[in-house]
Structures are given as C-alpha cells and as structure tokens.
Image: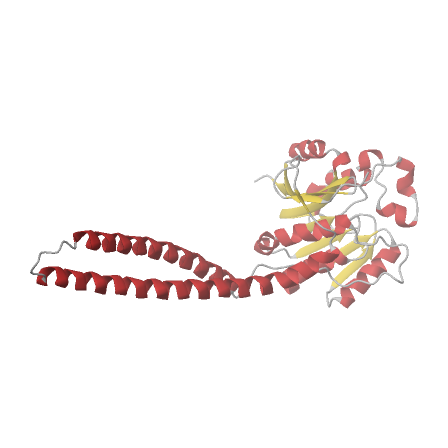
Length: 330
C-alpha cells in the first residue's frame, strides 16, 4: 500500500515530516524569498508605528506627571494627588516594559533583514532542464533523483568548502544530478559522468548542453577506466532494488534499478573499492534503500576506515530511501 513521502536529515529510524511530490519543489524554492520579504517589511512597519505611539504616550505621561506635581505644590487646600501620581508612575513602568519588548522584536527583525539582504543567500537548487524523448531506455528522474538533489542542496556549503578538482557521477542516467552539481560548484572543477548504458551517456550529454554545463560522459562500468585516487567527489545513485542476481545482466531500463541480492551487488563493488577511487580527503555520496541494510553498510565501511553519515532520508510509496555520505577517517 502506498504511503506518504516523508523526509528527515537527523535519524535513520525517526518518523519524519511529509514531503510533496517534487514537481512543486522548484516553485516553492523560487517563491520563498519573494514571500518572506514583504511579510517582514510589513512587520517592520508595524513595529515602527507602535514604537512611535509608545514614545508619544511616554512623553504625554511625563508631561502630565510634571503638571500634577505643580498643581499639588500650588494647591492651598492640600489636595492629595499622590494616588494619581502613583498610577502615572505605574503606567510609565509599563511603557518601559513595552519599549523593551519592542526593542527585542526590532532586533530580531533586523537579523531577518540582514539574512535576506546578504549578497550570498542560501542557495535554492532548481531541477536542471532535461529531455528524454529521444532516449526511451534511460531512467526517468524519480523520487530518488529528487532526494539526491535535496541532499546536494543541503550540502552546498560543505561541497564548496572542500573545493574538489575532479567530480564524477556514476550511473548518470538522465544527467540531472551531475548538472545540478555543476550549478553549485560552477567552473571550479572538472566534471565527469559514467554509465554502462550508451543511451544514458547521450542523455547526460544532452542535459549538460541544455543547462550550459560542461560534463564529459564516458560509456563504462563504474570507474574502471580512470586512474586510481583521482576523484575528490563521487556521486552514485546505484541500482538498489532487491532482485535475483540474473537480472543485473539484463538490458535497457532494468539495469538502472536491478540491484541483485540485498539490492547491493553493484553498490558493494564500488564500496569495497572506494579507497582506491577517492583522492585524499575525497567524499562519496550514495543513494541507498532500507532493504540494502544500512547498518551493515555502515559496519563494512567502518572496517574500511570510512565514516558513514546520513544526509537525508525519505519514505515514498512503500520505499524508504537514504542519501549517505562516506568520508575517510582522519
């Protein structure tokens, strides 16, 4: 039975907040900043008007208090005005409290303004353009693809901080993920993609062209044609569905999803060789399915001196998908 999509970036087992299908993702990203700023401006204006009224009230109270003191001093009949003065002093104290509250709100609004007006705002990654109409044997971007894009968006600061020189996506398919990475890092590194399906290589090249990216796509199995320890950054959305081993050797679309025993026969080939593929300080991001036994993967990678970090996960239509990050021990 289908279940709602759910996502988190904190825990493998934790139930998490619902996510809608990703076609709305780009619209939300584009409209978010435009929605926040007018609202903040309205709040800012209301606070400013309230502060002006508060200052005017404070001045009136002080003036009235002074007048009452003068009246009290000039009265020959000795009228007791102390009670009125006490009430005015109490009102003045309340105005002071209100002033402090408004100042706190103003400080918070100033911080929001500063965040909005930064020259380098938080990046909202949009899905790259793609057209697979001429490539019927290429995997259409799905929930796992969009989850990978979300993971890259969450890791923007980290990805830029490591300053990779060589980046590659294994099994690039449509080419959407590697094109998105190029949008993040721009011309700071060389981009490669590999796929065992020659039609997918052509689709990746076309997606790169549509998005003005420069990606060299090579028709090969994993990274067998590259020299050792070349890549600073490896991206891999492997065939992860649990199937019979025989299905791995098929043709066409089934090779994009058939993962063999535990859905890990292709995945393990990369993981057990990752130390020979990553450059010093290199990072690998990978999509996994719950049935792939995440804890076992973590244990294997720990023995191979790699940390395993959960970036994000999501439940969608009976699948529980993860994006994990592998980094070497230091």
